[in-house]
Amino acid sequence: VLNTFLSEVVQLSLPEEQKVSITTVTVGLSAVLTCAIQGTLRPPIIWKRNSITLNFLDIEDINDFGDDDSLYITKVTTVHMGNFTCHAHGYEELYQTHILQVNVPPVIRVYPETQAQEPGVSASLKCHADGIPNPKITWLKNGIDITPKLPKQLTLLANSTELHISSVRYEDTGAYTCIAKNEVGVDEDISSLFVEDSARKTHAAVANILWREEGLSVGNMFYVFSDDGITIIQPTDCDIRRQIKPDERIVGSYEEMCPRGEGESTQYCIWASAVNVRDKYIYVTQPSQNRVLTIDIQTQKVMQSIQTDPVPVRLHYDKSHDQVWVHSWGDMQKSLPTLQVITEASGGETHHTIRTLIERVDDFFIPPTNLIINHVRFGFVFPKSEPAIHKIDLETMTRIETISLKNYSCIPQNMAYTHLGGYFFVQCKVTSLASPLTQIIIDSVTDSVVGPNSDVSGTPYISPDGRYLISTDERGNMIRVQTITFQGKIKLKFDLQTNLHVADLAFQTSFSEGNQYSIYTTSQSQTDVLYVELSTGRMNILKNLKDPISSQDWPWSSHNRIVMDSGLFGQYLITPSKESLFIINGRQNILHCEVSDIKRGNTVVWVGDV
Ligand SMILES: *[C@@H]1O[C@H](CO)[C@@H](O)[C@H](O)[C@H]1NC(C)=O
Ligand SMILES: *[C@@H]1O[C@H](CO)[C@@H](O)[C@H](O)[C@H]1NC(C)=O
Ligand SMILES: *[C@@H]1O[C@H](CO)[C@@H](O)[C@H](O)[C@H]1NC(C)=O
Picture 1 (spheres, rainbow, N blue to C red):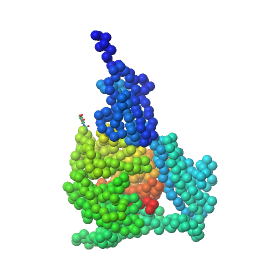
Picture 2: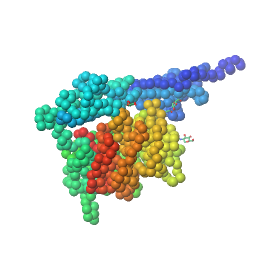
Picture 3: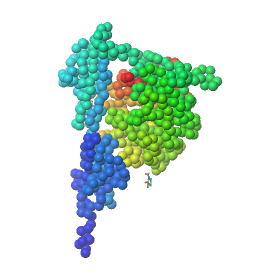
Picture 4: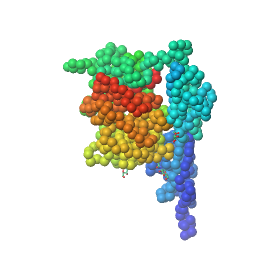
């Protein structure tokens, strides 16, 4: 009897060299993680990620634990990167860690697709590549690799992401192919250069390009919404290309764009938020008119006014579903906040809003798309004064889940997302001076709270490639820079002491190194703009950019002085002061120009190639 009893004692073992195991999988494929804990009468295996047990959760793509208790991920994405641990039920001390690395084949964009230059001027061909590991870039000219033996007047800059020709000659005309390659794939695209005397304009294609470059185009401009209407600015030469005045008529209804308020002596506009819809339309809110206007970019005309709930203050364009989300306050006290949706936003037909059943919306967050992530399915809503966030299905516009933040007494205020490891960073509201300042991390694989982001507080901003998290603490005087590694680890990179009281932040792609960024931050109360190179921490201050719009004059958000970049390949940024606009040259990191006499131009949209 004793013998049988003894033989039933559980004995488990895990070879030392298997305590940590690294698995590398390519995105889109499946992965099987097998627990190396062995032993007689081994109890069932429990799998965890960020201390959350996976076995009893109903998780899409992780749904089958197999006969041998292996963990199956049916379609790996970058959100799965990070650690999965396993242990036998009831024996938590003995556990194995699987580090899952996810490789992503390169995805590239070149710019420009075509360009025409006259002999003797300089030309740049750019290629931006994302992928894991970092792709290596090579260039072909008319099919022949030019990287090994570069002609004299050509230079490769920023890890070959830019091919610079100092003085173009006729024979530089050609099709330049950028090839980006890493361990798991390759992507390529062509940037064409025509060198031709503009006087001749023989080639129809060249004539077309020259026409565009002479500025007869409507793209590659900032559209600024201010008290004075809409100002369309070409940043290279700081030129105002068009001014749409407050009394200009809306095409669809023949109403004035900005009707004169009762008893007002001057006619001026009030705007809060604008979005670019596929470089075709701009949607912009007029909070005091309870409406959204659409602007046709090609004709530069105000097309339609769409009635919304009272006081619409924030828009988001959901590219994946071609919908514009409209957040309205109901009144200036924000007592009846709602969320509405305008569907088929890039279509030409007459638009209207659809009411969602989501109520008491304090604010909302929809993760951005980037080169690697081009479809977003879920958004998040912050219910008014509640320590929770609602997860919503963007397609059906309904709530599917509520994630409680009660354990952290966290009333959400802002959110950011990185597809690397699938982390959400939630900034909690400061409810009293004594309340702790924190950011909470949520794992998008399990929709569970992981815990606080160490001792980081402030507004989270994520770089377009998901690799940097910048937190700006408005109350304290700190900017913290963290990185998210390809193993899903969040690491402190450096802290910056500043008394800036950050109003807004923009990312600028680096001109000296591939896959790198710098940031520009504006201040809520001061005239300086801070620039920081993220790879080195090197910083600089652009001084005397005049006073920001006061927060009383900007009730719509805490961003009383925005700063906006000009896209992946742009080199200009724009930031308004009270009564003018400043354009910054992000390549040379200097002030480029001031455009005066534009009041409260704090709503801006960049329109790229049209
Ligand atoms: C770019 O080049 C620098 C210096 O040669 C190197 O340290 C860095 O790793 C490279 N970056 C990428 C993304 O390849
Ligand atoms: C909150 O904390 C309690 C007690 O520690 C725990 O039982 C519960 O699961 C936690 N809830 C959430 C949503 O994390
Ligand atoms: C994963 O586990 C390794 C080994 O224990 C550890 O060094 C690393 O910090 C963990 N990573 C994360 C994202 O927790």
